Amino acid sequence: MVLVVGSLGFVGGAWGQTTGDYRSFQTGTWSDPTDWQRWNGTTWVTNPSQGYPGQNSGTGNVFIQPGHTISIEISPANAIGSLTVGSSGTNPTLTFNSTTDRTLSVSGDVTVADGTFTVSNANGTNNHTLNIGGNLVVFATLSLNANIANNDFCTVKFNGSSHTISGSGTKSFYNLTFSNNGTVSIASNINDIDGTLSVGTNCMVDPAAGIN
Image 1 (tube, rainbow, N blue to C red):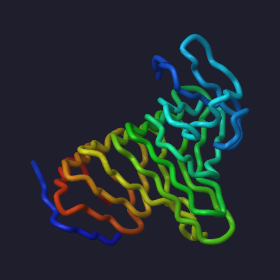
Image 2 (image 1 turned 30 degrees about the vertical axis):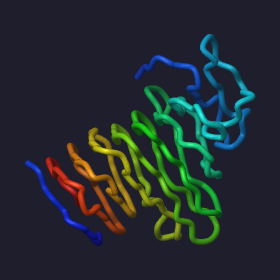
Image 3 (image 1 turned 90 degrees about the vertical axis):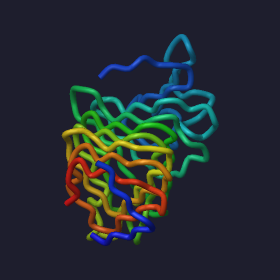
Image 4 (image 1 turned 120 degrees about the vertical axis):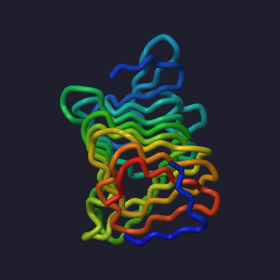
């Protein structure tokens, strides 16, 4: 792990849907609307006219349902409100899987409640990006350095006002960046950072748990 610091300071299941939320309908790709359902305020609509999550503005929570595998092979033009992988049952998988660098931006929280959020091996060298504006909660497996030996990895950037990293699951990163001007609370262990840890000039990090 390489640590890059501007000015590092240390200080001591179920969800209710709202209009614009998405959930996976079946195993498939992020950019295929037929693999998604969207809540219209009354019911879940398959293959919504609004397209895939983040294709247009107004996407709320995106939920990857148990048993489904969704491959991120596009960079949505708009940020999604929040991201939830799994709840209970058969493990779902969300994976960056593209021969081109892709970016997924989440304005709110990212939760890996069950299953795996990972990086697949594709041809060439691919550095994907996950932007997080809220908190990261992992009770299962976040493995975004999974294919660094095969030149596929992900840079995770926290860019909100304050963040908490928590949960009892496995958290493995390649590059991890805290670019916010607030506080980052590391409430549970980070298992691996195989690349670079970068901390913004005005960012305060509260290391309540360990970084391996």
